[in-house]
Length: 308
Image (cartoon, rainbow, N blue to C red):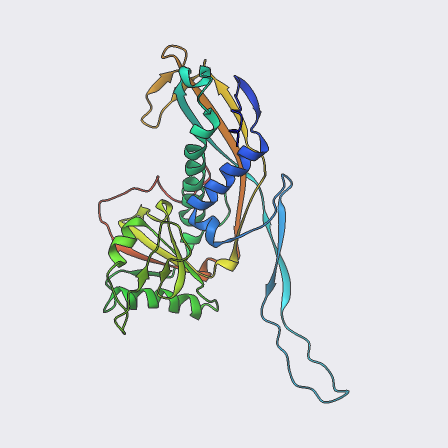
């Protein structure tokens, strides 16, 4: 079977070919714990209205011809607005000129991973977030070591979710959280965390589907987040199906340490990729967090809470 032809980008602005945009969105989804656990909804540039039921319909027994009960449940709506997420990736001019290098294939994993990581930090912890709500606003936080075991600590997180009127149906945990929890057992001597591979829903944490991701590992005010559990049906996300890009060999880039990189002077090229994502949640109390003390250690991408 012949190999697929290499799609060669050129300097200037355009939209990525749809098949490449779809691959980036899918790769970003598999690197984002929120996008794996929460439900996806269609999103347009005009935004998305998400209906939800406030309360629970109550049925009642009635006699033949008797008056039927009226439910107290009511329908409400939330609005998800698209927000732009962007990344710039510099690379050598030789990559752009080469007839044998598939530039999109080379850059695709880096773009997707950066999108997934930034999305998780925003949706979980409010890091440079454009969203109006994020999961880390929950007050249901349990410190590892509070109970007799990590199993009892996780049950305390679950209890907080249940007491708020929700059901915990999945977990996201960090690589450090995996280290803390692997090897621990429940009251029957069974492992509380079983893993079969990274970001796989065959993973289980105290019997619930679980997935691991770098974005869970965020430290703020001396507390390092290890795992997030909750009712993920109360969170939703969306993405608009095409990614815009721009390739330049003339720009001067400001790096994270405030140093600069002159593309023309250093014989480099850079691609800027931009996508639109949205996120919305019903109630932060549908979630809970397991954390550990990490005094003096601040990381995970910056301070939480605020539009970037």
